[in-house]
Length: 287
Length: 287
Image 1 (tube, chains in turn green, purple):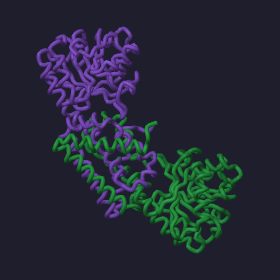
Image 2 (tube, helix red, strand yellow; image 1 turned 90 degrees about the vertical axis):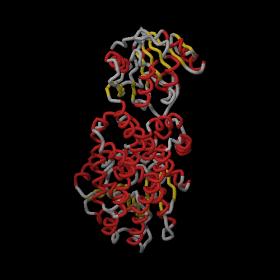
Image 3 (cartoon, chains in turn yellow, red; image 1 turned 60 degrees about the vertical axis):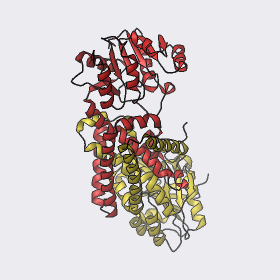
Image 4 (cartoon, helix red, strand yellow; image 1 turned 180 degrees about the vertical axis):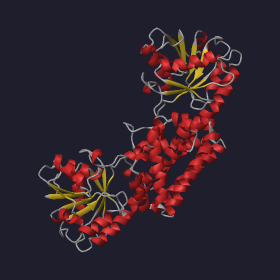
């Protein structure tokens, strides 16, 4: 698997960016790695760990010599960073990102890189409730679904290079329309996050003695609620229309459960629970 | 840790009952184990695996000689089974159960065993989405919170023996009022189950292509939705008043999220997510 790049520049060496540096270093030792971070501390660590050949807090300097640029900053900071480097990015360099929301990011960055049409959005679906370089690992992308979100404006060659980049880190690339991605992400990721946070809030508002009863089910169901509040506020805000619509749909389903319980309609409860168990087995077949 | 019983009889060798047999056999080889099941097949397996010294599909026969009786059948079948054995249970034998809902079970069984006041309710909080003897394991109770739910009618000696029984299987016993338990269980277990099922239903009602995006967050948040629909219908139905009330409260919190998103009130979203992350860290301190 070729990376199709001599120099890959990673902007923001957190969980996603740091893991990408580690994966590429391990799997493609011939590729030159460059890194940008806001602070010197993170870059010093990258240097010491041999995870970047060149490092700088000057974004333009890092962008200038790269064949592939991956913006790994929070989804609400991508456009600002892109604006700072767009003038110096090589016309044939691929630019992509890792943001959990695609429509607003793609719209913004296609505008910023409109001259050479070299931006294609990406969303590798392998984040976790952990964050930062300390949580990064070389196998984060292994087997992970990496969504690439081309539009009618995208250069097919750039789309292909973005897919290859994720595959070279171990991921499985799939293409999806940005708006479709955001609707899907609201349902399978953003609203499950909201539900997890709401369940913790529900427990938090109750008698403190109740918390002693929190067992494995509660722990797993609410795991994602430990994710970075700042990162998730940005994600939910950027995808607020779809997230809000999906919350309304979830509330509708919860109301069905509530009505069935109030009527003690065990047939309907059994029907709802059976459908959920069967559907989940389709998505995650029992091992 | 003494079991305070020479013969422990387990009714229903599924995940909970089977694991209890395995734990007691391993940790207290001197204790005699008896088992009842509806079908001969399960009993034959227990015999072959050396997990029961006596077995029968005749409930009265198994109950007669036991010093401690643990009813491990679904929560809506406990009372019927109790009625079948109550006439032959020794006056000084402890009777307890493992039901996920306590108030209706305790009310029913305190009535059935009112003469000798030898029933005390229990709920070891170590179930999982798996079920049956095939999923049973000797360490299921290790470190697990085992709630014992005495009432004003309970004999203190029986309460103590129930606690000791769970501790002898490796659990941590705590006492809680049955009604309080059911309110807590609705919040930390039953409604998280409903939420997980509702999230799967939400995904199921969407475009099938969305399911390809289901990643680790969705998998963990919805894990419990793979639990036995029959078992969970019984649990939710038995605890319907508390579950229904907790669903309503959850819907209220979700509505707060939805309003914040519609207003793009990022301060409020951040506040809600930060509170959830902090509260979850209190309940499950990061390792």
